[in-house]
Image (cartoon, rainbow, N blue to C red):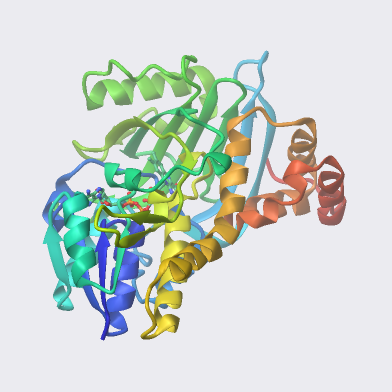
Length: 420
Ligand SMILES: Cc1cc2nc3c(=O)[nH]c(=O)nc-3n(C[C@H](O)[C@H](O)[C@H](O)COP(=O)(O)OP(=O)(O)OC[C@H]3O[C@@H](n4cnc5c(N)ncnc54)[C@H](O)[C@@H]3O)c2cc1C
């Protein structure tokens, strides 16, 4: 039996810990919070997981909340008209072939942590530092850092070539709401793109309820271009002001969404969040002062803006790749070559997520606007665009190449109009 240490009990760390534990590995997991603290804590994400990422959880039998969670059945894109208030300049929607799900990470991480403990897993409750990493790496065959956006990630050198941004490109404001009116037709990630101003997302999910159970809710995430008219949450004094400000912005910019949220309330006292993310990629292996090496995982290595809703799904996919490679490696040493190869396998997928997300942070080039325009009248194009959220390599090569974009439209064109 081999021993593995994982620092960080989030999407990637917990999923990998549970997978290794199920295969008979000795796993030490470092968590900075107890399940009770997680459940009573602040919201962290909108955490929509598309089908392939959900499959990695299902394969490990970890989809505990799927039956209770409202499915996300499609994606709807809207661009408000710059001159006609209340009108849309562009709109289309399509169904996902298989639904996505958003399970509040407070619920998921607390539940998975309890599961790990109840199966005999060893949890160290602490805010780990380099000394912790040293201690763990001296006593384990492999030590992984899955600390998300936590400071410990700075152990890993920033990969400048893969990190075009050195500052946050959006300022984020999130709230979990109840009493939100459903969309017509089908549930969806409602993706509103306001050129030069930012993006606003609404999507359903499952969160904690006051009685200790669960309840459905709607995520509302505002991604404000810094200094723009949506970037107004800096001085907000409390959750109710945060909610009022959100409603006011929706009324002003996206009246069709305001109609859905005007009677909404926060799900709980911790249901608001503001923040910002500097996107970036780090080198996969860090050398500790002792000379021992540790491997990064998830957001610690590949951190993207939440704009495309991919971070948790990518962390799940990374955990699945790492799990398979650890099991397959058997008794051989987890040396630098193995660590680099493991990350490279993940990066061969994740680079598309990073390129796509970084591209969306800038203004869309004409050929991308052509594809979005075509999606309004050609359901096949809308369907292909929407379903690529499940597997972002499908946005390529057309996203970066006008000729390929024209071919993408031709290939997916059918002669009906897409529902708006
Ligand atoms: C506003 C917002 C919306 C988002 N929406 C989506 C979405 O719709 N879909 C999607 O796929 N992704 C989304 N994401 C991204 C997603 O939440 C993350 O990418 C994902 O959780 C990353 O998983 P991870 O395991 O790498 O890190 P995390 O899930 O962040 O887990 C890391 C854990 O390590 C802990 N930790 C940190 N430092 C230490 C330490 N020193 N010692 C011990 N523990 C430590 C942290 O507290 C945390 O519990 C969103 C993010 C944000 C901010």
